[in-house]
Length: 262
Image (cartoon, rainbow, N blue to C red; front, top):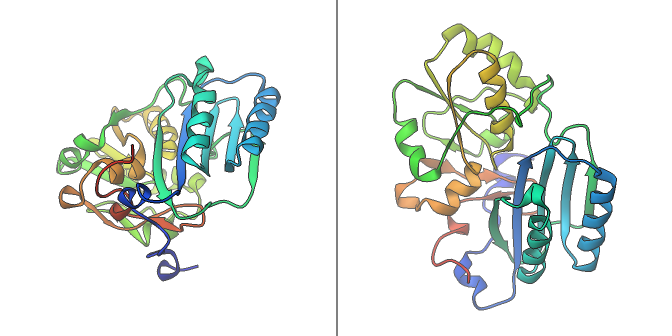
């Protein structure tokens, strides 16, 4: 798969189109939180997804939850409400986009050792870098003292990135500690800002960078998806498309333009 295959999927639609026809909501979310009774939670979520035709993947681990799912407006709202009824997920935040059909074919709920692996022990439930909202992001990355890092894999960076970002040329998330040793620790930047698709990789990597002794570590809250959702294209510093791990292949500002869906 190359950048041309990924970019420009014609089935992606804007919210204004959703107003006139039934469409699919794609919801992405994660949360680092200590979870117990993973087997019971897996059964409850999987049963609910089958009953409401919600497709996609939910990863569960003792460190938290990571998921992207798709379904009708009613089913996705019900699923999020079910999660938020649990005190562990009461403040769960999610990102939304819209598509002309289901973007997943199957239902997967899996228990993993970690919801995202950096390849070394790190606990974002103990400490993470400073969250930067999409509205604050442009000002931060304009700071000449900031080293801006794209924490995604090389094939993701190929089709889109923020202006001035460093591409670590990694093939997997667990390559980042080596990049840190070979590049960042040699130049020792005063400030570090990082971003990823939905925020999960940055949250774990920012915790790692704090452990490395860096004090001014920032990450984009909600990731690229939230930035595209909230920042108008005319004010955006994002260039290109954002790779996503489903049938859409990629998204951009066009997915979120015009009025919001009610």
